[in-house]
Image 1 (cartoon, helix red, strand yellow):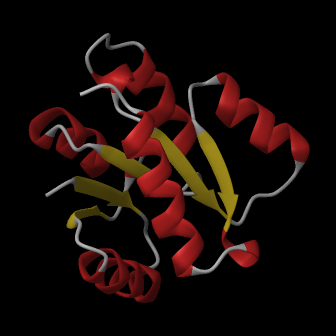
Image 2 (spheres, rainbow, N blue to C red; image 1 turned 180 degrees about the horizontal axis):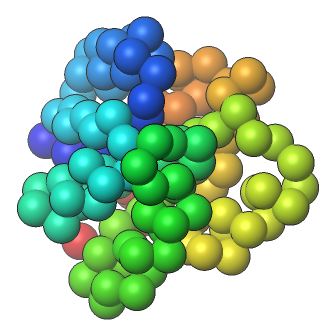
Amino acid sequence: MNKVLLIEDDLPLVRMYQIVLQEAGFEVITALDGEEGLEKIKRDKPDMVLLDLVLPKKDGRSVLKEINQDSELSKIPVCCLSVLHQKEDIDAAKHLGAREFLVKTEVDPADIVRTIKKHLKSSPS
């Protein structure tokens, strides 16, 4: 079973994504801030990370930077899932290593499941 780490501080969204992803067959780990997210990435080595950019304690950009400074962690695909939608936000996230950038208001849970499956299929094991 593929393990997905969801780093998101909006509890209703966390609960909703957790249910949808579990129903799609994923093991779901959650973190409510960037610091906790980084700890769980290092400890649990998920197969995929869904990362909000606007987070308490450590924002998503800082999390991306730290992931990509580690040769092992940088192999884990990261998809940003954020309300931020300006071109500069998207470009900055992709420059920092995000494989995909989804705008929360423009995607539904099924889109997120498809995105995860696409990246897990194309990721080297």
